[in-house]
Length: 602
Image (cartoon, rainbow, N blue to C red; front, side, top):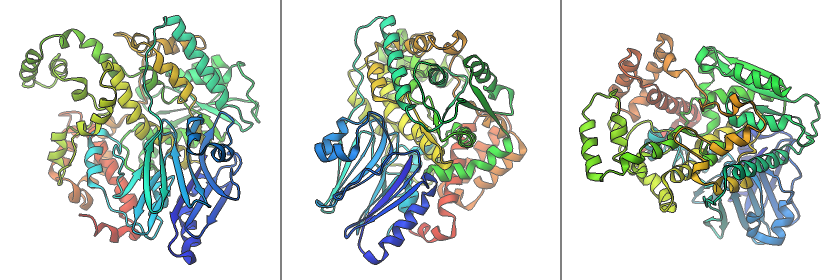
């Protein structure tokens, strides 16, 4: 993979120095090829891994591509012929920037699902952009300031959910969108929407369509002479990809004959899936490389992970992925991963909820509201309490995605500033686009547009890049999604099973116990750690510090921590979310060179 950056030139004498500084900030994104373009009006910088293909430039166009296009389309030639319509042809994971020298026009885009990041900011002097926010911060025109609205929403969603990032004035280009900069004006255009259009088909037909699409996508993603490995957990998604990769279905021209799979786990019995993965790798006949993550090294890595993410991320599994990538990078340059199956094919257990609530939601709304108001006063652990309360809400009211850490009321009590938007303000535009769909499809659509892009895929990119590893995701493919989007809901989710048809397709290549294994995610023992005096003390130091005092009511923070430590309730996810923000803040705002920027923060 690679990384790029660029900016509007105001002082040609300093342009080279600035672009080199911006490139140095993202040095981890590639050292195989470094290229700069210094024009009268724009400066561009590009870093590339040796695994990436040609430069894709000519005398009139400067092209910087981060990612891979898998359907053998040359971006430079196709753009010259088709212009912006090229976006309809591309199949792959990409973000790119194309500068037309003759027109003095910058054209940038991000793929359908947001596999690769793209950030931009406007200043008095023009535009700044890059693959990571670090490169934008390195520009002397940019003064980093914490975006307080982003902090408020993060406390609920566990990731940066707004288009405006944690750095005031820095924006993400949304997936399936392009950006044009010309005559000092930024224009954002949506070119693609990932719509579900269910078709009538049997379960057998669905299974065959899925397997054909997945096999073909794995073949495309492994069509390289660079040595490839695969991440392997005990779950069906990575196992399915690994099984196809290891089979003789396609001739994969590896430079090294031994195919490898990588698994990490913790030094706790219930938080370790290595044995499941080892059993499968033995059956597949591939080399299995494992890493046990000690508690100490996990905690030591936390600041590094938050730095590489650019914005705070409270997903504990991201840190485990950091170690998986570090291990894989010692053996291969490319690793396959199983992201997107849950969102595409209905893999999360929460997607069963509309089916379990179906009878209850058939009752009159006023009756459900009354029952919910009564249930609210029951003890928190009372069986059926949550069912009565959630069933009195529409899916739009009760579901904001796979993580829901602090409610709006809880975060307002915790924060010293109030947020402008409620969680529903964030999710409403997405629900509006699928308002005529069933509730399960609505939930999947929301997760594809928010959770998948801004949590799962962002960490896959940023953390793999931290180790110079290219991660490829064959299930995150436009042709695979076309199949997923055509499935009837009953072939996605039932009352008893998630990923119904997907599991049956995977079972063609996997033992039944793997294909049918229930989803665990990547279990991380933060609940246990935060009841250990050592780690309780580490977090308490941060919660009692000056940065926490600036943004939060410290007494509320310390109550959360103490209630968890003494076993009164499980506040582990809430504590973790705040703690990750504080570590991120230390990385980007407590260094000497950023001290003056804090004075600008309102």
